[in-house]
Length: 311
Ligand SMILES: Cc1cc2nc3c(=O)[nH]c(=O)nc-3n(C[C@H](O)[C@H](O)[C@H](O)COP(=O)(O)OP(=O)(O)OC[C@H]3O[C@@H](n4cnc5c(N)ncnc54)[C@H](O)[C@@H]3O)c2cc1C
Image 1: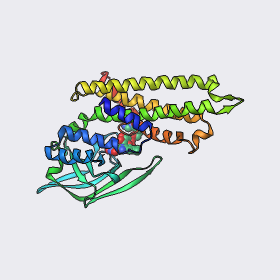
Image 2 (image 1 turned 90 degrees about the horizontal axis):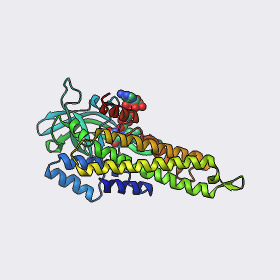
Image 3 (image 1 turned 45 degrees about the vertical axis):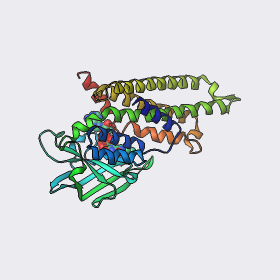
Image 4 (image 1 turned 30 degrees about the vertical axis):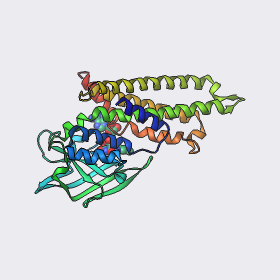
């Protein structure tokens, strides 16, 4: 996991166009943990040769409250029939499959009765419609109308989807943190170059203490974020099966909030040029803003951390 974090940090710092990597890695983790040998061969083999994978949990009425999801998969002879919709499914438009978290059973416990089912992107009965966002077209609506999935396309155990999702939390939150760490480092690097070059009042703007102190704080926060990411990654490497709800939420919360601060401050300290698309800073701002929303909002991470503290 530490290697994967370093890889993600460096590729996002270099703005390498591999946006599909995060959802692919999340699906790869779930396949590794719960897949049959045939599924591993197909999905992991595909990923190894460059394919992208997507995962769909969120629905219009089930965002932070994933347990409220209602897109249903009904048992039929030889498989399942899916009906319902998903929203914000990142990379579905470029993926080989979508791993859909469906409702297979309704019971008192809303977290029971979910099942993960693979659907090939080109399957009949699934419509993929892009959503326009400030980040461009990276995420999609999915509409399922009598979409047929084979029995062998169930990942893991029927009705145990929630438990399977929880098992992937460490990895999912670390991936998001490491990606944002690279964005924050890029913003700081760009900011430093700019404030050393840009002159106002006959001096480089980086010589003004009003900017220096803020940049020093950002660099300090960024270093703390990096240490935290590497620390949680090394805990996962020590025991990949151990659940780390507190640490995983802390690292996702802290790193994404730091990144948002670094990019917004970067824009402010670059003045009008930070806002203009002549520089990358405005793009880094857009990328960082959503990071405190997806993968569980900052509010939800705080709620989880509070729970682990017995509150
Ligand atoms: C660009 C993008 C990509 C995404 N990619 C994917 C993907 O690939 N797959 C996928 O399944 N999902 C994806 N999502 C969905 C994402 O995980 C959800 O948007 C997120 O979990 C929040 O859900 P919501 O948008 O419905 O907001 P809501 O849950 O409606 O929340 C709205 C506000 O209320 C707050 N809130 C809600 N409940 C509580 C509470 N109990 N306590 C305190 N505050 C609360 C939230 O923190 C937030 O500020 C993506 C989203 C975006 C924007």
